[in-house]
Length: 152
Image (cartoon, rainbow, N blue to C red):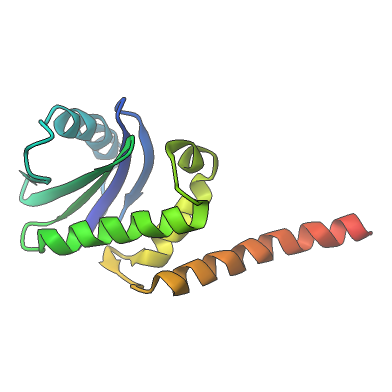
């Protein structure tokens, strides 16, 4: 099970956080403060898995962002890396070569894509086409009422 997802910039700023387990606000702020320093200080040649408090942190760097997933200690690390890669591929297809600014200005779309991919800490949908189709349908629904207002 995935406990939380963090997207962190190379400067240590959290760009996206999604929590699938219950944490208090104090615990969330401590984790978001602790994770960047833990991950960013590691050498690039070290593996992408860290054992942390009876759980595993699995992370991958893409361009200027670190995608950090916290999973159960018994979960398969390689499957989690594949989920991270799958998420990045979907973001790339949707935004067209996604960058940090896309996630800053369109964070709600990134959350929506993550919600389509992972539900309640488990992988929900594996098809990129299905997720992209649902996201574009959501975009059409959001744009639809605005067009009708202009016609009036």
